[in-house]
Length: 231
Length: 215
Image 1 (spheres, each protein chain N blue to C red):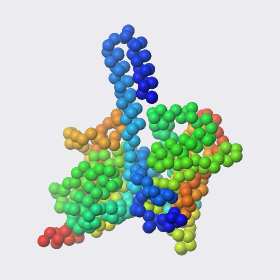
Image 2: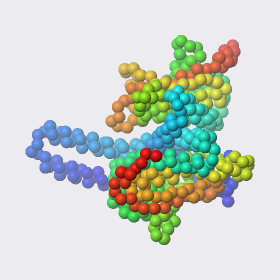
Image 3: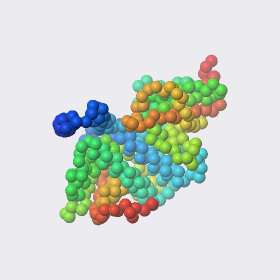
Image 4: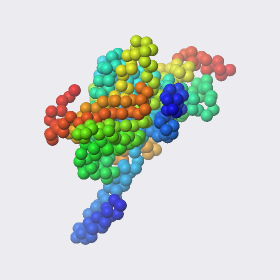
């Protein structure tokens, strides 16, 4: 559909162009072809990396954090911080790719409900290749949950059982996938939504599903970039 | 409930993500940028704690070492022939083909033996994903962002009983050396001018043992 619309528009433009010289027409044709080829290829070919290498790399990062900080609460904080710096950057890529794919997010995200749908359905699919669902909206529509079963970060991972020894008991407080919270927080902050994100359920702790709770604190005014501080 | 029965990680299929309905999803890749984000954070974290370039490389290597041990186990279990590599050349082939394929989806570009030293081998990759999208700032000059991969190689080799010192180096690609089109590059991105060379230096006892097996 998009292609036929494009080609119609192209024909109309072409018809309006007889006055200009052949060279300009040629250039114009090439740029259109180039644009189409580029759009199509960047939409179709999504570069991929091995999910296991991804999981193991994240694992080595978490292990290092646990080794350096010892207190799992501190590790959770660090993971959240690391996630935020990812989120701040990945929102750009997300918007660019969604735009190229012709999804028109600007008109789509009118309410937090729409935003939740986009984050869960498209965000997770685009970066992690897994599907996620959103639901459990609160009465005032200001908080929601994201549910997903497959967690690419936790392949191969097992947390030490509770009460095993002092260290093992301690590590039960570790939120292994806490990086998601930071990512979502960072990404939504870039689009002027200040949110609180917590990892509520985690399959690593024996829960049925992974659940991330997102709570809207405030909608920032435009120009929030000014008070962005280096952490 | 079947879910509870499969909750123990040891009972689940290796590496596949178990899903509640028991269907195992065949999704085994994530977007390259997702990996790049996490890897960049890993490097940044270590960079903040390392005082010098060589310390940063050493830290990345040690981060990769544990990964290498696990990768060896994983690849060995999945291998069809269930064979343990005992010879020097075959373990190197194993690393540059099987391990490389399972991690990066392709074989390493070449495997060479050093002319000067008997105990040194080189695994060459023209565009490893750990450094293709990395530009090293001036003040970190000699840093190779592939140190993580060299740590993985060291982990695999050590786990297989071939202790070795593995280091990553950036080497200028010579004119016309690599004629293949880039596989991972974004359209419009200039071709890489440097390749990654992983220098594998085996311990003397490994060479001695291999010489004994020769007879």
